[in-house]
Length: 548
Image (tube, rainbow, N blue to C red; front, side, top):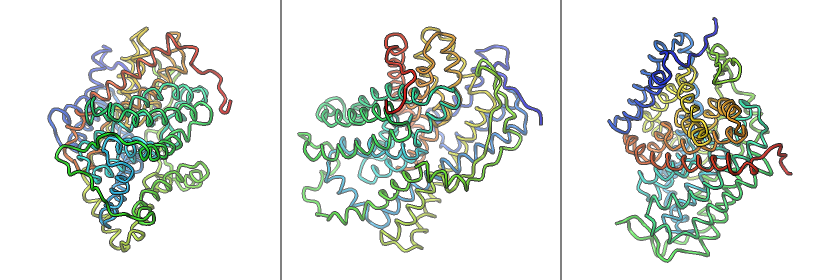
């Protein structure tokens, strides 16, 4: 089959072409946030519109369009839906066995204050999970835990989405940075260091932002030492590891160190008043004194999950597991779609490899942890599988929504609609450092992953930065750093969060609740990048070597 070249102005007018390219995404958010249509229907409607526009406006050949849809569905099942399903399965096992009560009281033993529990679970524990695998696991697992602990389910979803931002650029054992290296050709150490100089500033802000969204300023100031300790420790670890060690273990080390420091700090320091939700029963004054063995037993599913996910991310084991991956070129699509200037410097054939990576997927590590945890918690093998199949039935509509979202994302990518939207942001001149950061935000909102945004717009950032005389390392890094704030509004994250806390059907409400947080935090990152571009050039790394 002959190749097909993407057309970035199919209607002969740049702004009209941009408006048409944005239609599927705008429709999706309109259906979710305004019309409040259930997520799987909104996803399928928007997906159908994207297919029609790709075929009849952008001229994408039908066989290639079919290949793009197939590629997106395989990715959705293996990388996203499977991880979410397995994560909720692990949580359901602790509930079915009755051990979640022990987990609740053990966290209450560290601190009964809901504000500080958010920092422990959503921020620190979520960072470990993001660093180890990502793929929806941080929101799914932390959200389910918080809902089970007594947080309002909707609030738990909001908080987990906001918290799962600062770690995202180094998620999946540094995968977004590796993708950025692949598409830009810039040194990995420089990109890692630059991202590690932007995001620690937001990491310092984020704990205060989380608590403020729960309680208001008065309640936030009451726990400022805890917020400061959380942000400072994680930010310092993120800066040090990304600048002097590597890009792979930034989140895992940062999250684990933050967890340990906070657990010790919250035992030595407590706020004057314990904050709980209005009308929530006060914490038990004299909880049953569980032994360390009982606590470890109850926590064993999540301990196993964390250990397996981290183990799965280790390069040596990952290489072995990847050997079993069945990789198939997407039919009629692989290297058939050609990206051209101004999106890339020279014509580039887009690869499209469908990877049936069942063994190496984070979801498989999580599922294995669940299979082992069931009998450890006292459930029979039969009862363990009954819990799994019950979880599958409960999650059926969420799975369908994820398929629709990823189908939409892959169609916009291979048809060139994403590039059309990205090009609209490059006509901003001296304001490009700010709007280039927002381009990364848009990329993650569209694709659902920071790595996906880097693959789409990393090269475009470098080309535009070179033309404007701005640091290429800075703008490539800005794409990744700005992208993390788009994570909380991408459609699949919204669906995962609602499904994890049992709030299916409220995806539109959740999108509206986190949208302003996403825009405001992305703007803060944009201002940081702007400062580096024109006032802090001496802090932009060049020719770094890890360990030096």
